[in-house]
Image (cartoon, rainbow, N blue to C red; front, side, top):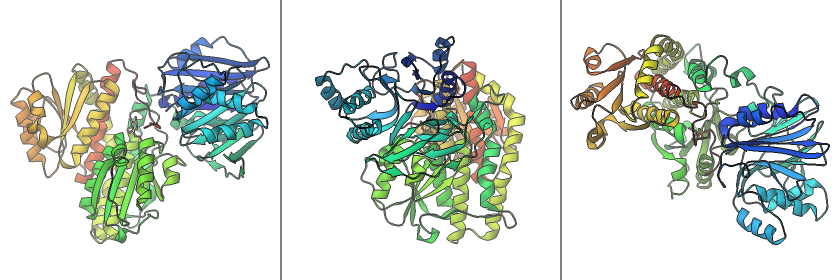
Length: 609
Ligand code: G6P
C-alpha cells in the first residue's frame, strides 16, 4: 500500500515539509519510512525501519538546503520491514532515487536480467529494479522522460512512482493502478498518494490517470501518456479543509471521526433531500430504476458490512433482490450477471485493489456499475458508470467509522428513492422515511452526550478479556459483524460477530463467565427472539452487554451492562447502533495502550490483492 510524496519548492525546509506530508500519509502504512533530498553535493538519502516519527527524530539535527525531495512510508509486501528494504531505492551509482507504491509483478525476471548486466541490488524489494532499469535505459540516450517511458512500458503490476535524480530540481512521476495526485502550488508543486499529504499547501489538484507519467518543476507540471504524447489535464479544486485532516483536540483521529458522524450524515443526506416535500433527489443512475431487476453489491471490509445492511434496504424498501459479495471472492468466480443487474461498488477510499478488480470484472460481464465512494477522483469513481459520493470528509484513522455510517445513510436514501420510483413506496411513506433520517444526527449527538461515559467503562471492562462475541439479528446482524471487526482491528481482542439465531449452532459451546457477549437488542420485530437468545447465554453464566432502546426491564435484568440508544425507525437502527460499538472498541484499545489510529499489520487503503 504505502504512502509516497514528492515536493519541488524553494520555500521552507523541504526535509520538514516531506516529514509533515508523510505523517498525513501514515494511515497507508507504517512499517518503515524514508526520505531523499537533492542537494548540490548529490542525493541525500535516509531511511529507517519504524514509524515516520522515528525517522523525524533521527533527522532532527539535519540542516540541509534542497529544492526537490521525495518521501515514503511503507506497508511491506516484498521484503521484510528493515532499513535496506525501506524506500527510497537507488540505482548503482546513487544518481537516481525513487519511491514506489504498488507491486512490480515481473520484478524477478527484470532483476535477473539487470544482474546479468552487472547491476548490484541492495534490497529484496520489487521497487529497486525500477531505479536500475532507469539507469540502464538512460545509457540508451534521450531525455529522462523518454527513458522513464521505456521503463514503465516494461513494468507489469501496479505502480505509483516518484523519481528524483541528482542533476535536476525536478520530480518524474508515473502511475498504473496505484493512486497519484499532483498538487499545484504557487511557484512550487507537489505529488502524493493522497490529497491530505499536501492539503496545507494547496487544494488545486490534478488526478493522474493510469498510463500517465509526467515531470514537475518549481514552475511547471507536464503530463504525458506512456508513449510520450502530451496530455491536457484540468485542475480541480478540493473543498476538504485542513482542519478535517487534523485531530482538532481529540486524542486520536478515530475518536474525532466517531464524533463527526452526525455532521457527516447530514452532509451526505442533506443535498439529496427536497425539503418542501421530504422527497429524495438522486443523481443519475447507470440504469433507470424500473429497468433494475436485481442488485449486486461488491466491497471489502467495513464497506462490505455496509453492503450487507444495504441488502435489507433494497429488498425490504424497494423490493429488489440483492446479493452482496466480497470483492476478492467475486473477481475469481464465474458470476452470473444480466444487463438489468445494477452493480454497486462500495469503497471509502476508492482505491481498494480487490474492489477495483471486481468492478472491472462486473463491467466486462455487462454489468452497470454505480460507485458509492468517499474520495473524489479516486480510481473506483473514474472506472464506474456513475458515482454517489458520501460526504464524510477525509477519514484518517485506519479503522473506518464515519465512512460506514455515511455509506449506510446513502444506501438507505437510494433504497427509498428506488422504492418510490418502482411504486413500492408512496409519497407519504417516503416523507416519513426521509424525516426519520433527517432527525438521526441530533439523536446521535444526544446518545454521545448521555452514554459516552458508560460506554467508556464497558470498553475498559472488555479490554480485560481475550475474546468477545457480538450478536444481532436481521438488520443488526451486519452490525454485530462490524462491531466485532472494530474490536479486533484496534484492540487485538479476538471477537466474532454472529447472527443471534445461529449462536445455538456452534458459538454457544464457547459461553462461560470468560466470554462477554455484546447483544444488539434495540427495538425490532425480532426483539423477543433476541431476548430468548440472551436467556440462553445467561443460563450458561455468560456476561451480557446490551444495546437497548425503549423500556425493556426484562432485558435490563438479564444484562450486566446496558447502553441506551435513542429510538429511531427500525431501518435506521443499524446507523446509530454501530456508534457505541465503535466507541467500545476505541476505549478498549486506548486502555490497552495500543496505537488506535494505526493498528498493527493493517493499512487504510489496501491497494494490493
Ligand atoms: C482496509 C481498511 C478497512 C476498509 C477496507 C475497505 O482493510 O483497513 O477499514 O473497510 O480496507 O476499504 P475501502 O476503502 O474500499 O472501503
